[in-house]
Image (cartoon, rainbow, N blue to C red; front, side):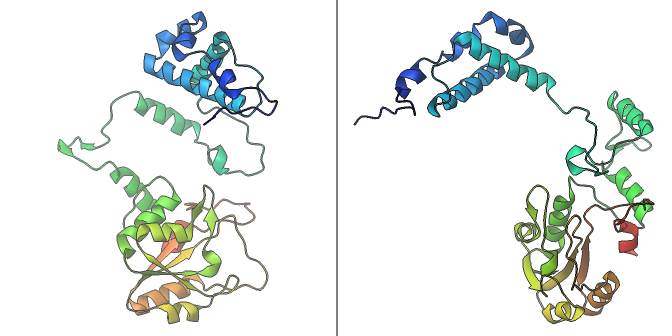
Length: 291
């Protein structure tokens, strides 16, 4: 069987690929000497293989007419090494018009907080230790206490993002039971997190009620059964349905949940703690939701 492939210009792909330098030949280039002192050998080898894989793909796609010399590949390896060590997050100017931009780190820390973080990170801290008693503590206790003071909550838990918070909440409180959600609130947020997927992954069962644009309190009431664990209200964040729309107020859902003895879970999205004057569409506050 003849397995020889050809490039778009008719060249022999096998011949082109055989022209690629070996990994050890690339690593012997003098250009990489400074990086051999900064990176472990296996890491530099991995970067060389990545660079060669990049060139191999270009040859297969016909974007290069000949294989590169070892020095040219080594220059690519050096660039990869520089990006690895020095190519982390960089300060940028937010000119998007979105004040709290998810992709740009959202809210900036005030200088006093930056200085405090730098001070703490430069030393060992009592992150999980009670100095007064010498006993093992809980690392989330400080943040939880502050959140309870700010919101009026009875308890608090900090996790990585809102989708994780919803998942943990459902997994803990609603696994193997039903969760009622309005069809108009089954949104997809940044990062590809979808409410139906989060519910399914938590082990709960989604029960849809209402229509895309209008859901009434009666829709929720009729869907409650012996397997119902909770009503989940989802704040649409950067998504809006306007015009002929309807959604029950949170107070109405709260009264219904209490009457039927089930939970009411409120996914606020951003989770704003204080009101910001001048914002055209202010986000709902956590304290107001809890109240």
